Length: 165
Length: 292
Image (cartoon, rainbow over all chains, first blue to last red; front, side):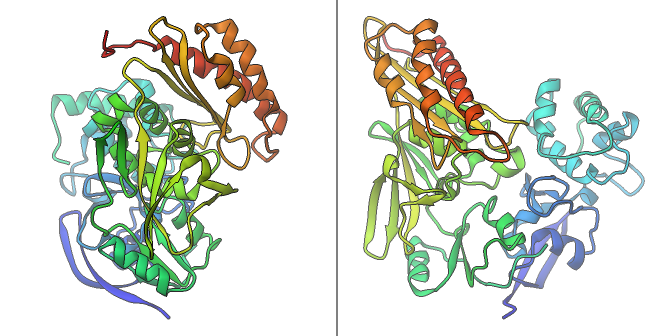
C-alpha cells in the first residue's frame, strides 16, 4: 500500500515539478535521496539534534519532522543555498571558518540554517540570546564556544555588509 | 528510521476532516508534527491513515473577544510568541511559550497539537490549566466546549472522542495590572520541564489578593492546581513569608518517579518553584497599563 503523490517544490531557487513521492517519505529523505542535496544531515531523525534544519518559506524547521507531501507548493532553503556563489562563502560561513565554529561539520548545516533565520530576526544579539538560539542544535565537537563566537562575529559582519540570504 | 506505510489525507475543511475521522479506522490527526512525527519515525504509532490538518482553512487565528483570547487550534507556537495581543493581554502564555522547545519546533508546532498530545510537563498544557481555558471540539454531531479542568482524563489522554477534532482554545484574560509568572526547572533550555510553576495574582483595590491561580506541571498525570495555596492567598497582602509558608503544601502533591527525577525531588521543586513564581508574579502587580 505504497501511497504516492506528486509534489512541486522550490529548493534553493530551483523549481522541481511533479516529483513522485511516497506519502510517508520525510522531507529530509526527499531532499537527500530524491534531490541529491546531501548537505542536509540526519542525526537523530526524531527532532532532537537539529542537524536536518532547513528553512521552509524562510522559517526554520526540522526536515525529519515533516513529510515531503507537506512541502508541496512551498519554498525551501538548504545549506547548499546559503553561499552567494560556488567560490564565495556567506558571511556567517566565513565567521564559522574563522572562529573554529566547526570541527567534524556534522551539525554545521543545521547550525547555519538556524542562524540565518535567527540573525535575520535579531541582527544584534547578546551571547545569551545566541546560546538560546542554538539550544536546539547539538554539537559534539566544539563545546559551542567557537560557534557562539562565530555568531557574534557574523552579526558584526552582516551589519557592516548585509547578505542576500 | 522511516515512518510506517499509511494512507495520507489532506482535507481543506473541518467538516471534511471530521467525516474522514468518522469513516476511517485507525486514523491519526497530524497537526504541527513535532510529537506525532517522531512517534511515526520510531514506529511507536502505526496508523493506517494520517489526516493532515495543515491545509484545513480557518484554524489559524488569534483574536480577542468577550474577555478572552480565542486561538485557532492550528495556530503555530511561533505566532503566539510574536503576537502583540498575546504578550499584552495574556502575558502568562507569552512567558510560557518562550520555554517551549526551540525556534525550529515553535515554527511548526501548534497550540492545538500540544494540548491534544497532553504531555503533563508541556508548558502550554500548564498555561491552559492555569488560565481555566475552554476548548472547542468539532465532531459528527456539531461542536461542544470542554472546560480545561475536565480535559485531561488520564495520562496523555484528552477528553476528546475518537471522531472529534479540537478546533479552538479560549483563554480568559486577566485584568490589566495582574501579576503573572511562568517558570520551570529543566536540564537544558527548551527541554520539557521536570517541574513547572505558573502563577497569576489579581489584587483588590486595597492591594490584597482577590484572585489567585497556581499550577504545577510535570508532577504526574497532568497539570495540578495548587488549590490550598490559592485559597490561602485570598484576602492576604502578597509577601515572601506568606508565599513560603503556603507553598510548603505543594510537597504533598502526588508526583511520579521516573528517569528524570524522583517523586521527592519533584515535590521539593513544586514547593520552591511555586514560591518563586508567586514572588515573580507579585513583583509584576500593577505594571504599566493598569487603569487607576
